[in-house]
Image (tube, rainbow, N blue to C red):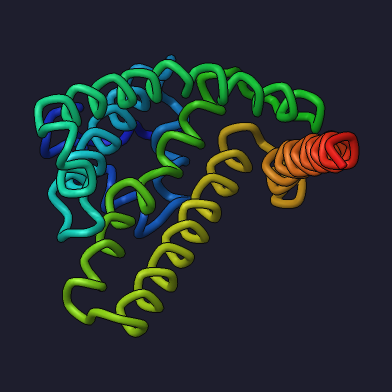
Length: 213
């Protein structure tokens, strides 16, 4: 039986999990696969997404939310931030449910809670480290700062992508290629639907423009 990851879901326990999952995804998921349900994964995601959102509020101007909408007032911006953060938590259940459909279609052995774990812990790099990309323009303004920001964002996205694939593979006893399919197939579907919608929008706009001539 796999050992459970040490540390509760207090500040120290969450910090331990962040370091562990980013340092050794395989070892981390081998530990947490023995945990029942997704309570710890949900708390983890809620905390790191909150921290990431707060840091984005405090990031150097013009990339911080508080400085981007001075006409709205700081109180209103903070209220919007809280609403979107709560909506993000609720949507995490729906999004993970959607991905779990593909887990089942591709032969995954674990339950929904394992899918939630994989995507929740896989968000650690982008949620915790991704905010660093906002400070680069402040340190090095201009093109250099923008390039550094983009490189950092791409790096964190790829890192999180890798962690999620490892989580799906270990928690659902799937091959790496099948785990990759769980993410790429829905992404392809979304891209196709978006392309179709854009095509129809273009056709409607062109038809409307022709009718006005």
